[in-house]
Length: 178
Image (cartoon, rainbow, N blue to C red; front, top):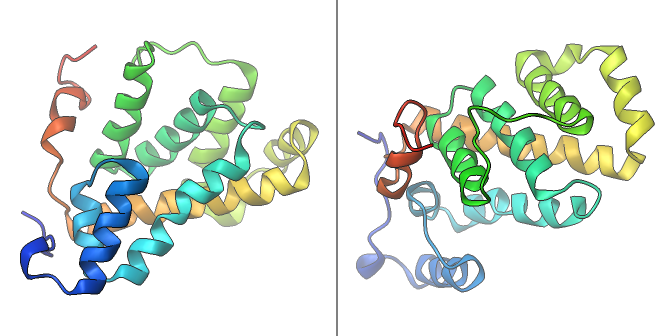
């Protein structure tokens, strides 16, 4: 059970309801994490910058590449909700997350995601060399900032113990969805 409740839309302040409605307008859905974050519209807005950075990274990093990067961060951070969210993204596009054959770029991004979580102070120099050969500096800045928000999302879900979204259950690791 979550340590913090989700908002109650009917009793929420106008500010919270406006942020809720805007999230629905922009993205068409409301997750349990977002319903919890909305107790602070500022916190919700900051976490929603994930989408802004994702847009900045497109087209330098494809959807599949960003999902693999995010999935690697989520797995390394042991965030069941985030892991399953990116499993679902992959599955919805016809990929089996349990049997992915990674391209060189995807393997590089997955390794970078794992390294960021393992010890952000010690991402291997060889990994940085390969990243700098492949991506421009702006892309790398955006990618690291994106990873920070991705990791913050995993931490929020883990620390608060946000309730698992029911629509994700069938896609969790070991659920036999693929």
